[in-house]
Image (tube, rainbow, N blue to C red; front, side, top):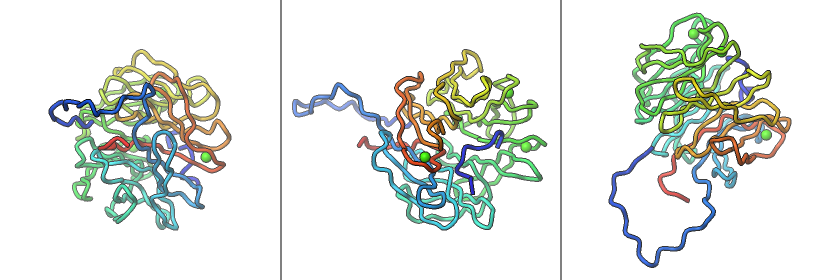
Length: 300
Ligand SMILES: [Ca+2]
Ligand SMILES: [Ca+2]
Ligand SMILES: [Ca+2]
Protein backbone atom coordinates (compact mmCIF):
# COMPACT_ATOMS: atom_id res chain seq x y z
CA UNK A 1 0.00 0.00 0.00
CA UNK A 2 1.95 2.95 -1.24
CA UNK A 3 -0.69 5.53 -2.08
CA UNK A 4 1.00 7.96 0.27
CA UNK A 5 4.18 7.79 -1.76
CA UNK A 6 5.26 10.39 -4.22
CA UNK A 7 2.91 9.85 -7.09
CA UNK A 8 4.50 7.98 -9.95
CA UNK A 9 4.96 9.91 -13.13
CA UNK A 10 1.54 10.97 -14.41
CA UNK A 11 0.24 9.11 -11.75
CA UNK A 12 -8.51 34.50 0.41
CA UNK A 13 -10.54 35.37 2.21
CA UNK A 14 -10.83 39.21 2.31
CA UNK A 15 -13.13 40.21 5.09
CA UNK A 16 -14.71 43.61 4.63
CA UNK A 17 -14.34 45.32 7.95
CA UNK A 18 -13.33 48.64 9.35
CA UNK A 19 -9.70 49.14 10.13
CA UNK A 20 -9.41 48.76 13.89
CA UNK A 21 -8.01 51.64 15.87
CA UNK A 22 -5.33 50.22 18.09
CA UNK A 23 -5.23 51.43 21.64
CA UNK A 24 -2.09 51.98 23.63
CA UNK A 25 -2.70 48.54 25.17
CA UNK A 26 -1.92 46.83 21.85
CA UNK A 27 1.18 44.70 22.49
CA UNK A 28 4.27 45.55 20.47
CA UNK A 29 4.82 43.48 17.34
CA UNK A 30 7.66 41.00 17.30
CA UNK A 31 10.33 41.71 14.73
CA UNK A 32 10.15 38.03 13.75
CA UNK A 33 7.13 37.25 11.63
CA UNK A 34 5.72 33.84 12.58
CA UNK A 35 4.71 31.42 9.84
CA UNK A 36 0.96 31.29 10.11
CA UNK A 37 -1.44 28.70 8.84
CA UNK A 38 -2.27 25.04 9.15
CA UNK A 39 -0.97 22.39 6.79
CA UNK A 40 -2.87 19.18 6.16
CA UNK A 41 -0.99 16.12 4.97
CA UNK A 42 -1.17 12.35 4.93
CA UNK A 43 1.24 9.99 6.64
CA UNK A 44 1.81 6.29 7.24
CA UNK A 45 3.39 6.95 10.67
CA UNK A 46 0.59 5.07 12.45
CA UNK A 47 0.63 1.96 10.30
CA UNK A 48 -1.58 2.90 7.39
CA UNK A 49 -2.17 6.18 5.66
CA UNK A 50 -4.13 8.70 7.75
CA UNK A 51 -4.84 12.46 7.54
CA UNK A 52 -2.93 14.81 9.85
CA UNK A 53 -2.76 18.53 10.49
CA UNK A 54 0.06 20.67 11.83
CA UNK A 55 0.92 24.31 12.33
CA UNK A 56 3.00 25.65 9.47
CA UNK A 57 6.05 25.69 11.76
CA UNK A 58 5.73 21.91 12.15
CA UNK A 59 4.30 22.01 15.68
CA UNK A 60 1.07 20.37 16.88
CA UNK A 61 1.14 17.43 14.49
CA UNK A 62 -2.29 15.90 15.06
CA UNK A 63 -3.88 12.77 13.66
CA UNK A 64 -7.37 13.46 12.30
CA UNK A 65 -8.48 10.08 10.93
CA UNK A 66 -8.33 6.60 12.42
CA UNK A 67 -9.49 4.08 9.88
CA UNK A 68 -8.17 0.61 8.97
CA UNK A 69 -7.86 1.49 5.28
CA UNK A 70 -6.03 4.40 3.71
CA UNK A 71 -7.12 8.04 4.08
CA UNK A 72 -5.15 10.46 1.93
CA UNK A 73 -4.92 13.67 -0.15
CA UNK A 74 -6.70 16.15 2.17
CA UNK A 75 -8.06 19.52 0.98
CA UNK A 76 -9.46 22.16 3.35
CA UNK A 77 -12.63 24.13 2.61
CA UNK A 78 -12.15 27.89 2.08
CA UNK A 79 -13.75 28.67 5.46
CA UNK A 80 -11.39 26.26 7.19
CA UNK A 81 -14.25 24.26 8.69
CA UNK A 82 -14.13 21.09 6.57
CA UNK A 83 -11.69 18.70 4.97
CA UNK A 84 -12.28 16.70 1.80
CA UNK A 85 -10.14 13.62 1.31
CA UNK A 86 -10.05 10.15 -0.22
CA UNK A 87 -10.66 6.92 1.65
CA UNK A 88 -9.74 3.64 0.05
CA UNK A 89 -12.10 0.78 0.72
CA UNK A 90 -12.28 -2.44 -1.24
CA UNK A 91 -9.41 -1.12 -3.38
CA UNK A 92 -11.54 1.79 -4.57
CA UNK A 93 -10.89 5.44 -3.67
CA UNK A 94 -13.97 7.30 -2.41
CA UNK A 95 -14.47 10.99 -1.71
CA UNK A 96 -15.18 11.87 1.92
CA UNK A 97 -15.73 15.08 3.89
CA UNK A 98 -15.11 15.51 7.61
CA UNK A 99 -14.97 18.36 10.07
CA UNK A 100 -11.59 20.10 10.33
CA UNK A 101 -10.97 18.32 13.63
CA UNK A 102 -11.51 14.94 11.99
CA UNK A 103 -14.99 14.35 13.39
CA UNK A 104 -18.07 13.14 11.50
CA UNK A 105 -16.54 11.77 8.29
CA UNK A 106 -19.18 11.02 5.70
CA UNK A 107 -19.02 9.52 2.24
CA UNK A 108 -20.15 11.44 -0.80
CA UNK A 109 -20.72 8.11 -2.53
CA UNK A 110 -18.46 9.37 -5.31
CA UNK A 111 -15.33 7.59 -6.51
CA UNK A 112 -12.20 9.70 -6.89
CA UNK A 113 -8.88 10.99 -5.68
CA UNK A 114 -6.69 14.12 -5.62
CA UNK A 115 -9.68 16.17 -4.52
CA UNK A 116 -9.44 19.99 -4.22
CA UNK A 117 -12.13 22.30 -2.82
CA UNK A 118 -13.29 25.22 -5.00
CA UNK A 119 -12.53 28.78 -3.81
CA UNK A 120 -16.25 29.46 -3.25
CA UNK A 121 -16.63 26.25 -1.26
CA UNK A 122 -19.41 24.79 -3.38
CA UNK A 123 -17.62 22.24 -5.56
CA UNK A 124 -14.87 19.65 -5.55
CA UNK A 125 -12.58 18.89 -8.46
CA UNK A 126 -10.85 15.52 -8.54
CA UNK A 127 -9.28 12.85 -10.71
CA UNK A 128 -11.02 9.60 -11.53
CA UNK A 129 -10.01 6.56 -13.56
CA UNK A 130 -12.66 6.01 -16.21
CA UNK A 131 -12.22 3.46 -18.96
CA UNK A 132 -8.52 2.85 -18.44
CA UNK A 133 -7.14 6.31 -17.89
CA UNK A 134 -7.66 9.24 -15.53
CA UNK A 135 -10.08 12.09 -16.17
CA UNK A 136 -10.86 15.36 -14.38
CA UNK A 137 -14.31 15.56 -12.80
CA UNK A 138 -16.22 17.93 -10.55
CA UNK A 139 -19.03 17.35 -8.12
CA UNK A 140 -20.96 19.57 -5.72
CA UNK A 141 -19.82 19.42 -2.12
CA UNK A 142 -22.98 17.45 -1.30
CA UNK A 143 -22.06 14.73 -3.78
CA UNK A 144 -24.57 15.78 -6.45
CA UNK A 145 -23.95 17.46 -9.78
CA UNK A 146 -21.26 15.10 -11.14
CA UNK A 147 -19.66 16.37 -14.32
CA UNK A 148 -16.79 14.90 -16.29
CA UNK A 149 -14.53 17.65 -17.70
CA UNK A 150 -12.03 15.66 -19.76
CA UNK A 151 -12.66 12.79 -22.14
CA UNK A 152 -9.54 11.49 -23.86
CA UNK A 153 -7.17 8.55 -23.90
CA UNK A 154 -4.39 10.31 -21.96
CA UNK A 155 -3.92 10.53 -18.24
CA UNK A 156 -5.42 13.66 -16.66
CA UNK A 157 -4.20 14.24 -13.11
CA UNK A 158 -3.70 16.57 -10.19
CA UNK A 159 -6.48 19.09 -10.77
CA UNK A 160 -6.54 22.36 -8.89
CA UNK A 161 -8.66 25.51 -8.95
CA UNK A 162 -7.34 28.81 -10.16
CA UNK A 163 -8.03 31.55 -7.60
CA UNK A 164 -10.78 32.99 -9.81
CA UNK A 165 -12.85 29.89 -9.09
CA UNK A 166 -13.82 29.74 -12.76
CA UNK A 167 -10.87 27.81 -14.15
CA UNK A 168 -9.22 24.51 -13.38
CA UNK A 169 -5.58 23.66 -13.93
CA UNK A 170 -4.27 20.15 -14.20
CA UNK A 171 -1.51 17.91 -15.56
CA UNK A 172 -2.21 15.88 -18.67
CA UNK A 173 -0.55 13.53 -21.10
CA UNK A 174 -2.46 15.20 -23.95
CA UNK A 175 0.81 16.81 -25.06
CA UNK A 176 2.46 13.44 -25.61
CA UNK A 177 4.48 13.60 -22.41
CA UNK A 178 3.02 15.54 -19.49
CA UNK A 179 2.21 19.22 -19.35
CA UNK A 180 0.13 21.74 -17.47
CA UNK A 181 -3.22 22.78 -18.88
CA UNK A 182 -6.02 25.18 -17.93
CA UNK A 183 -9.71 24.98 -18.83
CA UNK A 184 -12.93 26.57 -17.74
CA UNK A 185 -14.70 24.71 -14.94
CA UNK A 186 -17.21 23.45 -17.51
CA UNK A 187 -14.44 21.73 -19.48
CA UNK A 188 -14.28 24.26 -22.35
CA UNK A 189 -11.50 26.60 -23.56
CA UNK A 190 -8.58 24.28 -22.93
CA UNK A 191 -5.17 26.00 -22.98
CA UNK A 192 -1.76 24.31 -22.75
CA UNK A 193 0.60 26.27 -20.47
CA UNK A 194 3.87 24.29 -20.65
CA UNK A 195 5.42 22.63 -23.69
CA UNK A 196 8.72 21.11 -22.61
CA UNK A 197 9.54 17.56 -23.70
CA UNK A 198 10.03 16.76 -20.01
CA UNK A 199 7.23 15.99 -17.59
CA UNK A 200 5.42 18.91 -15.93
CA UNK A 201 2.98 17.97 -13.17
CA UNK A 202 1.44 19.16 -9.87
CA UNK A 203 0.41 22.70 -10.89
CA UNK A 204 -0.64 25.10 -8.12
CA UNK A 205 -1.55 28.79 -8.62
CA UNK A 206 -0.42 31.57 -6.27
CA UNK A 207 -3.31 33.24 -4.41
CA UNK A 208 -3.15 36.29 -6.70
CA UNK A 209 -3.17 34.05 -9.77
CA UNK A 210 0.04 35.49 -11.22
CA UNK A 211 2.34 32.50 -10.68
CA UNK A 212 2.19 28.74 -11.03
CA UNK A 213 4.27 26.42 -8.88
CA UNK A 214 4.79 23.02 -10.43
CA UNK A 215 7.06 19.97 -10.55
CA UNK A 216 9.24 18.94 -13.49
CA UNK A 217 11.94 16.38 -14.28
CA UNK A 218 13.57 18.59 -16.92
CA UNK A 219 16.98 18.41 -15.20
CA UNK A 220 16.73 14.65 -14.73
CA UNK A 221 15.60 15.10 -11.13
CA UNK A 222 12.15 15.97 -9.84
CA UNK A 223 12.32 19.60 -8.73
CA UNK A 224 9.89 22.39 -7.81
CA UNK A 225 9.62 25.38 -10.17
CA UNK A 226 7.65 28.61 -10.37
CA UNK A 227 6.61 30.34 -13.60
CA UNK A 228 4.36 33.17 -14.65
CA UNK A 229 0.76 32.15 -15.26
CA UNK A 230 1.36 32.34 -19.02
CA UNK A 231 4.18 29.78 -18.79
CA UNK A 232 7.09 32.21 -19.13
CA UNK A 233 9.85 33.19 -16.69
CA UNK A 234 10.47 29.72 -15.25
CA UNK A 235 12.55 29.65 -12.07
CA UNK A 236 13.84 26.52 -10.32
CA UNK A 237 13.28 26.60 -6.54
CA UNK A 238 14.70 23.29 -5.28
CA UNK A 239 18.05 21.63 -5.91
CA UNK A 240 18.84 19.71 -2.75
CA UNK A 241 18.40 16.16 -4.03
CA UNK A 242 15.59 13.68 -3.85
CA UNK A 243 12.22 13.78 -5.56
CA UNK A 244 10.43 17.05 -4.82
CA UNK A 245 6.73 17.31 -5.55
CA UNK A 246 3.30 18.63 -4.68
CA UNK A 247 4.05 22.36 -4.20
CA UNK A 248 1.20 24.27 -2.48
CA UNK A 249 1.11 28.06 -1.95
CA UNK A 250 0.27 29.38 1.48
CA UNK A 251 -2.95 31.43 1.64
CA UNK A 252 -0.91 34.67 1.92
CA UNK A 253 1.34 33.70 -1.00
CA UNK A 254 4.57 34.02 0.98
CA UNK A 255 5.38 30.31 1.40
CA UNK A 256 5.26 27.08 -0.56
CA UNK A 257 4.80 23.72 1.14
CA UNK A 258 6.01 20.64 -0.70
CA UNK A 259 7.04 17.04 -0.20
CA UNK A 260 10.52 15.64 -0.71
CA UNK A 261 12.28 12.34 -0.10
CA UNK A 262 15.70 14.00 0.06
CA UNK A 263 16.36 12.38 3.45
CA UNK A 264 15.41 8.91 2.24
CA UNK A 265 11.63 8.91 2.65
CA UNK A 266 8.96 11.47 1.96
CA UNK A 267 8.75 14.46 4.34
CA UNK A 268 6.83 17.75 4.35
CA UNK A 269 8.91 20.90 3.83
CA UNK A 270 8.14 24.59 3.60
CA UNK A 271 10.11 27.34 1.85
CA UNK A 272 9.75 30.98 0.97
CA UNK A 273 8.07 31.51 -2.39
CA UNK A 274 11.50 32.34 -3.86
CA UNK A 275 12.95 29.02 -2.70
CA UNK A 276 14.90 30.39 0.26
CA UNK A 277 14.67 29.45 3.95
CA UNK A 278 13.75 25.77 3.50
CA UNK A 279 12.44 24.16 6.68
CA UNK A 280 11.73 20.48 7.23
CA UNK A 281 8.47 19.98 9.15
CA UNK A 282 8.26 16.18 9.50
CA UNK A 283 11.06 13.91 10.64
CA UNK A 284 10.55 10.14 10.50
CA UNK A 285 11.27 7.15 8.28
CA UNK A 286 7.78 6.72 6.80
CA UNK A 287 5.86 8.53 4.09
CA UNK A 288 4.57 12.04 4.81
CA UNK A 289 2.98 13.49 1.70
CA UNK A 290 0.36 15.64 -0.03
CA UNK A 291 0.64 18.88 1.93
CA UNK A 292 -2.17 21.41 1.53
CA UNK A 293 -2.94 24.60 3.44
CA UNK A 294 -6.14 25.15 5.30
CA UNK A 295 -7.06 28.80 5.82
CA UNK A 296 -7.10 29.79 9.46
CA UNK A 297 -9.81 32.30 10.32
CA UNK A 298 -7.97 33.37 13.43
CA UNK A 299 -4.21 33.62 13.73
CA UNK A 300 -2.88 31.39 16.46
CA1 LIG B 1 -7.99 11.14 -19.78
CA1 LIG C 1 6.09 18.44 -20.84
CA1 LIG D 1 8.81 10.83 6.53
